[in-house]
Amino acid sequence: MTKVTLNGRSVELDGDGDMPVLWYLRDIAGLTGTKFGCGAGLCGACTIHVDGEALRSCQTRLDDIQDGSSITTIEGLADGETLHALQQAWAEHNVPQCGYCQAGQIMQAAVLLTENPNPSDADIDEAMWGNICRCGTYQRIKAAIRSVAGTGSASTADAARA
Ligand code: FES
Ligand code: FES
Image: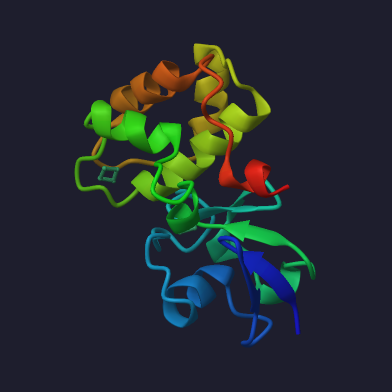
């Protein structure tokens, strides 16, 4: 059975190996912050981090996860009581409308800023194009990312645990 770290805790991924990780997170682990959108890898609502990479959990089977991997969901992005810089920026810029896509948006943006702490507008567009927001909050998402870019405050929980 695959043993992983999930939001800083050791867990065994018990379940059908063909089960999407998204199902495991929501239905077995009770982590419902990660959302089901399209179920087809097209919207980004289900984005999580696996070993620091942004991954579509609806398209990843339990058997695709390597033993010893570190998985982070939106619930594990904050450092204890301290919100991740992007979560703070999302609140300051009133980014969410219905909110459904926003966990995935933040998880995608967190990897962008870990890999490229000071992205250009073009870098942001390139990193975020696959995360769909049916409410059209794209300008506020971009403003929130810009406000954190270059501040050096966006290291992810994954990086802190590495
Ligand atoms: S629900 Fe996974 S990409 Fe849309
Ligand atoms: S805030 Fe509604 S889908 Fe993005």
